[in-house]
Length: 242
Length: 242
DNA sequence: CGCCCACTTGATTAATATCAAATACTGTGG
DNA sequence: CCACAGTATTTGATATTAATCAAGTGGGCG
Image 1 (cartoon, rainbow over the protein chains, first blue to last red):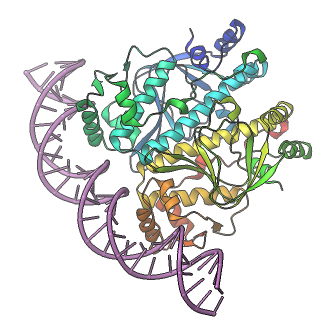
Image 2: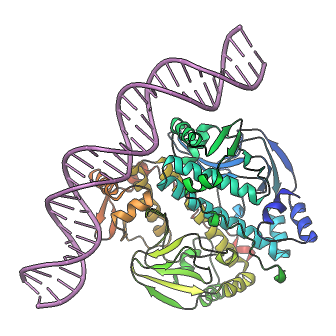
Image 3: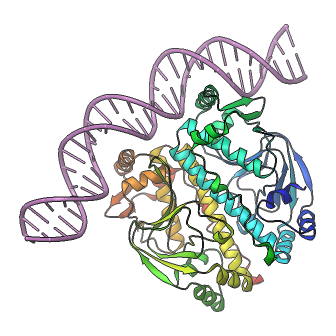
């Protein structure tokens, strides 16, 4: 199944016609090298991009060189939904692993959404979920201490991949450096290292070789105070109305 | 001007017909007392609400009693845009001051958006800006130290009010307690107090009597590393296409 | 082989939390 | 108007968390 369809199918099921409309709206696809920024702050927002494969992130730099990663993008995620409504980008996009990124014009997406209300709803759903995840990150970074926040993050990625049918057991590719992990959790790389070690010592995870393995899902969920409700992974759209 | 129209007018200008369609979509309006939660996590999302007057916030509680405020809502802000697409709420809404809150059914909003593409675009814009603000909060809480984050927050509120034409000089109503300020910045109430005091000593702000006064806007902007670009306050919609 | 980068470890410092107590402010009933 | 209770703010002392500095280990790869 095409990654975009797979992602939106979390929200609703699509007819073959809708599926092909979705897929046809995405034109070019190009390979982004690992660690390459494929959109920078202040870039004029033109095309709408979709991550087809690999792991990406959104991040913001500060003047003093600090950086905050504000979300991770998984296969099927749209990178710039609706961005034509905004004058400028407010954050950058980076490929963590090598990524396959498709592009689409905003016009053709608008056209598809006009024709298929369910697709419009699905993209709107994706935007809302993204926002919900951002709010949860504020909590993660603002309130949870390092070990707890790390556990929460590992759970988030696991549940999102799981919903895509991409979790291989309790083991998933997670090629982030400890520096990047720190940038996502709002802590230093050194502290990220100690944090990972603590989770390892508690036999909750294994992390290395660019993979994360959950050794004790219940334990990790409890440690992170994780409740998957905010990911809104249940299908919602009334398909009879299509 | 009606608060909702005033807010969306940041994005685009509306014809009288569009304005009245917008206003008519909002039915009941009720007064919420200060500190009252008017939506709780796990509430089933039914109506779409709009803040007409007062100051509100979105917040999330943790099991241990900690709380994170994840955004402030100003007059004209929609509280639950598109929320009918989600099964459950993922955060609560609280009135900080006494608030006037209007309600609307999702159906009637859908109808208005179907009829007036510009209104659809305006609500989409609002959702995107909200998400951008959430991302900036992740940075604020994750990377900036307390004084800097506080300065940044005070700038954010100022620029947002300014865009609504509601900043009275450099002085605006800000009836949050220092506990709430701490909950927004991810710091303790005691530290919030010392933080406020530092900003006062530097002659950047005055804060008291439920108002915030900016004594030195340039200084505050610099202290907070504030760049208003992420608020996306420039009108964008091509009105000739209406 | 040797270099580069990520990871690891230890020691010290800085930021912030927590605990505790005192002071001011707000509204209310008498 | 005053006394009072309750809440918010302020201050000080101490504890914890995480940052920084510095040095060492280890693997992957030209």
